[in-house]
Image (cartoon, rainbow, N blue to C red):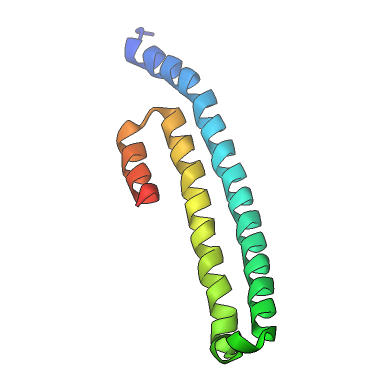
Amino acid sequence: MPEMPWLSELTARLQDFLPELLAAAVLVLVGLLVALAVRFLAGRLLTRLLERARRRAEFRETVDEPEVHSTIPMIVAGFVFWVTWLFFVSAAIESLGFTVVTDVLSRVTYY
């Protein structure tokens, strides 16, 4: 059987890249879990703060509407989720050495 140097080189590169890819995948999954937890906590905290503000007489007219009471925490919690998750995704992609993608994600995150 003839020797195929390209196949052995490809196998060697994959063996070198596989641990980095696995670490990046773990980082993305951990980031997703952290982002979900932060979204939940931010939503609960903001809901409680709005409930406390609603009880006060001076804010009653503004915050008493049900749409405002439920929409604001959802929007803020969603924003916190995406910022947190993009931070972890950016770190995972940077660990793989894809600087172009990392630069784009960093610009989006910093914006």
